[in-house]
Length: 308
Image 1: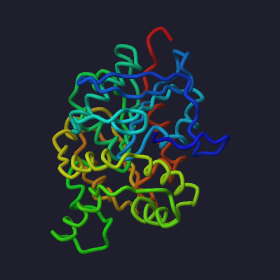
Image 2 (image 1 turned 90 degrees about the vertical axis):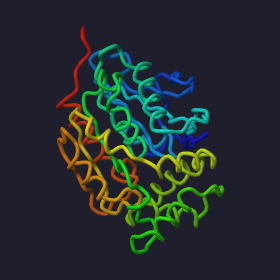
Image 3 (image 1 turned 180 degrees about the vertical axis):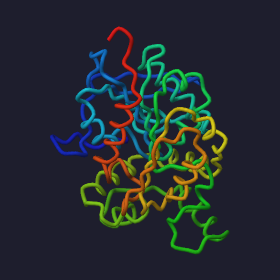
Image 4 (image 1 turned 135 degrees about the vertical axis):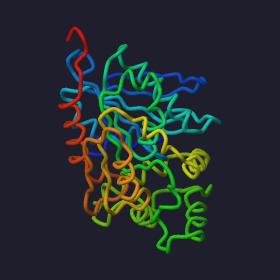
């Protein structure tokens, strides 16, 4: 189960959901969904959070906790991650299908929400940009630490000069089938180097390591192949809702070149933030700043449900 242990307290302990449900995707895949916060308040704006590769709902613990007062916060486990069973269908179309299923299961017809995606979660939002369900429910979008194409080519995980050798080796590293094993001091150092900034606190590194190491290795490998072949440049141009972009300047997995390309291509970009010294795990490394961007989008673009 790709979740942090339920600690008594602390910023990285996953809060208990007010409601849990299962959304069923177009191909029958079952998705674990949680709703937090003001679930019974019709005036509470909705926020939907989509996590990235090898993560789970636990990744959003800080945002859930901060937004629960006054918001309905929806989180779900991508297929094969967390409490969502693995599926042989791994593709950007499947990601879009899954998002539409979650939106349909948690939002009223025509209800708008601010949609937030980190890494593969951001790619999920891009993949769904032309879908009817997305357009029905998206009030605004926040893309965190993500890209639309050339992920392996642009990766800085290996300290080598850009070129065919670096791309080939990066593909091998990111697509490895090797088990990650227990979270050891060495494992924490490796994960911190690859995914976080040098200033990440030990508790942040520990939280990320426990989430990532819980992802089944076959799931990790299967989705790595999708990311290797990713090409959603066309989908970015279909993302017409107000969209903001956040990236860390020390991001090695999706470096700032991707964010800048997104900003240039988005039809309705409403802001771009580069966080100095922050790595790929922006919602955990800079929780207050990411939450503030979400609040800004809610305040500006959220639509209250009719009858509230």
